Length: 295
Image (cartoon, rainbow, N blue to C red):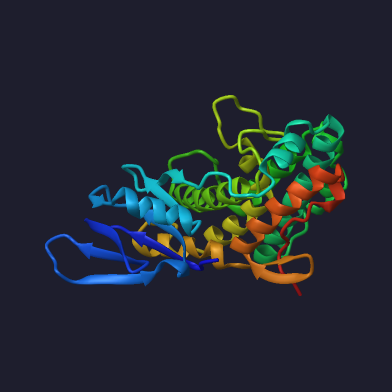
């Protein structure tokens, strides 16, 4: 698996030569190249970058996540490969035929881990444990919406006078980091043979990636911690340096099954364990990312 995340913010063209990604800026004969096997993610921020169909095809072959961006330079689309798993039909059948009890227990586990990770963020930043109370309160299917209650408390403690969807740099940074996670998880959902639109909790008919919205939840606090540690939040807009900093989310370390791995690797492993859990109809098989122990 590749490990490099590359952001293209200036006009130019991208093409493939000898299985290397080659970038040539407009009005320049100079080129820069990177082996395709080293790349995990490409972000096309500039609207004046030209690519070929062959380039896109090779990105698919190397399982590279490719993002496009909107006028505000926020990721707004992602190119992911067709299903690559050798047992697509069986996995899809298991996914479609999940029983409600399994869905509810899986969602309970996801919510508990999300709140656990949110609690650790607050411990790291402020040495407070105000969210621990909520973890044991999460029931099957989270029917009392403990996730919402914990989140309301969490955001009030994480940022002063914060409104999640207001037009602020805090939210722009959070949205940028979440978008990178969302695209990466979507890639691994597809390559694991799962059906991206079939969530266990999220079920928006207009969302083709409901399952991604479920699985991203315990990963969100890792982005939150990165954003909280930014020293440029008082500025108006995200700079290229802010974006480079946020792109490090994929290389951030976490704990997964008592092993220290990158967030990108954890995204893949979570999707695989989710597939195994629905095959065995056993929610306990699902493994989720944790923060490295805080001492």
